[in-house]
Amino acid sequence: AYLLKPAREMLILTEGTAEIRSYAVALQALLLLVFIPLYGKFSRGFDSYRYMQIVTSICVATLLGFALAGKAGLAVSVPYFVWLGAYSVLIIAQFWAFASELYSREAGERLFVIVALGASLGAWLGSAVSRELVNYLDAYGLIIAGAVTLGLSSLPARRATLSVPEESRGQHEDTSESEQASIFAGFQLVFSRRYLMLMALFVIMLNLVNTTGEYLLSAILENLYAQGSAAGSIDVDKGTYVGRFYGGFYFMVNLIGVLIQFFAVSRIIRYGGFSVAFLLTPVVVFLGYASLALLPIIGWFRFFKVAENSLDYSLQNTARQMLYLPLSRQEKYEARAVIDPFGQRIGDLLQAGVIFAGLHLLNWKSQEFIPLAAGMA
Image (cartoon, rainbow, N blue to C red):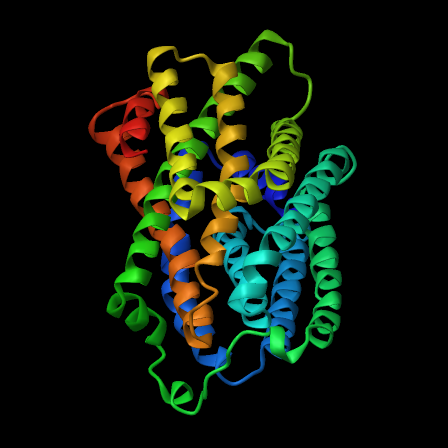
């Protein structure tokens, strides 16, 4: 993922602008409206390991297709941005669905903190590698590298399937009825259960705030590049400048995320419980935006976004995934595919509307979105 994300920013901010980036984010929700029902329908026909292999193979082939099209001179920035947004949340949801089906609730509550630590370490290592590779590879080279590592990441899954004792696995209900369910069964599950609906609303709001901050960060980066180029202090092209910035940014996000995951997450969940674990990230985000509204310092905004994303990827993600452990297989796959990918993209869609209204109806500058973000947090 952290080989693919800098490539995404290099392409979208070179061929487009921060505003186009914001609108491209919204298109991801429309893509998922088509993709999620198909994902849910096909998930009923395969066991967990086989389905993971199929999804991974399709994603690897798609990434290589984008790289080849870009190398051939086609403009792929917006299609790649839209596809990657859907891919990045769906492939993670796919992994956690596999893990939550592999382990029982009791085993999962003990082991998910360790599994999430592995995810955090991988994200940090990926961002460290991409920070160096951006000096040698263009965006399409990073995409190819991401496709190769994605293919390799599927290799341990079979061993994990064989190594978990039967008594430690999650419960698997009879799927004879679910196989005949509607292709919109995932949406029906979410709307029919208050537990799932509240999780979906939480994901939508959290992502609405986060992507508003991503827009602000990319707008600030554009301004810094324009000012530096005019002053002669920046002597590289925009794609390289953006790639270096996001390579360093994701490196810090994932380094701090690893430290939070290793030293804090298990203790917060053990002693504070899920309520505290869920409350902590929104409180930190609110305090960060409130301080920026009072004292809008550009340098502080970068550090704040690092803290927000680090908490989201570590503490927030671990606690949220644990909530799926007691659910049925259909809920773990199909309801999760609605809540995580589609819920996040609905937040993106709302964010695009907020950005459009602010820029074109209210004539706001980018910094004027900060008090709004604090209120949403």
